Amino acid sequence: MTLYSHSGVIMAQATCALCKSTNELQTSHIVPAFAVKYIKKTSLTEKFTSLENPNMTYQDGAKRKLLCGHCEQLMSEDEGWFAKNIFWPYVNSEARSFAYDYHLTRYCSAQSLRVLLYLESKHAFLDSPDLNPSQRMKLAEAVDEFRQITLLRARKPSRYQHHILFLDTASDMGAKVPWLPKFLNHYMLRALDSDCGVDSKRVLVYSKLASIALFTFIYPRAPKKMTGTRIHGHGTIGTPQHVGDNGLAEFICSRAEVVSLIKDHESPKRQAKLARRFSNTKRPRMGSEYERAAQADEVLRLLQQSGPEE
Image (tube, rainbow, N blue to C red; front, top):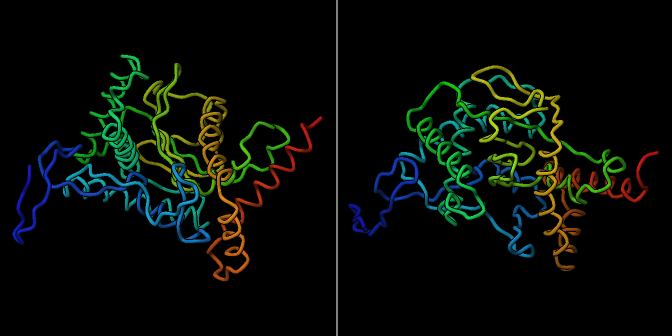
C-alpha cells in the first residue's frame, strides 16, 4: 500500500509494530541513538565495526522500519529521560547513584519491546523452532504487556522484573577465572548489543548500552543472587552491585566472545590504522575509554598467562 504526501512524494505504508495502524513507518534505532553517539564520540575513528564485517566501519547503529511517527515519539520520550538522568551521568563519571521513577520502568519495557519487535521483524523470532511452545507463549505475553505499557503511558511497574547493571573493567579476575574472553573489558565498556537469551532455565531480553546493561526477565520473573540491580516503581539505584548468578555471567561472557571474533579478524592494515590514530589523538575524551578497555584487557591477558592463584 502507498500514500501520497502533500508534496506529491510517494511514501510506503506498512503496519506499525506497536500500535498496529497502517502508516508511514519511521527508521528506528534498535540500540538507542544516544549510545551510538557515545561510542562514536569516544572511539579512535568516530566510527565502529560489526561482526558481519570487522574490517568495515559504520557511522550508525542497526536500524529498521518498525514504528509509525506517533509510536516512535512515545518511545523517544522515556528514552530521552534515561539518557539525561542515567546514561550520560554514568558514562561521563558524574554520578554513581541515580534517583528514578516510573520513567525508568517504562523505558526498560519499551527498550525490551523494541528488541523483541526487531528480532521478530528480522527473522520471525517468535515462531523460531529454537523456542518451545511455552517459551513462545511467555514471550508473546511479554510483548503484549510491554506494548500496553508503552501505548497507555503506564506509571505502574511491569509484572516482569527489570534489572540494570553498571559495568566496569574486570581485569583482576583473570587469574581466578582463566576462561574469560580475552577482550572482555572491551565488551564491558564499549559494546552495543541486544538479544533475547533463551535456554532451558531462563528467557530474558538483553540490551547493552556501552557500560550499562539492561535485563528484563521473562522467565523466571524473579532471578536469584542479584543485589542492587532491580528496578522498582521508584527509588535509587547505583553501584556497588552484586551478581552471583553464574548463568548470567556466562551469558555476558558468551556475548563478549563476539568481540573477540571481531578483534581476531581485524586486518593488519586496520590494526596499524588504529595504532596510528591512538598515538596521534589529542582530544582528551576521544579514545580514552578505548585505551582503558585495551589496558584492562592486557592486564587480563597477563594474569591469565600467569596461571590460577594458589
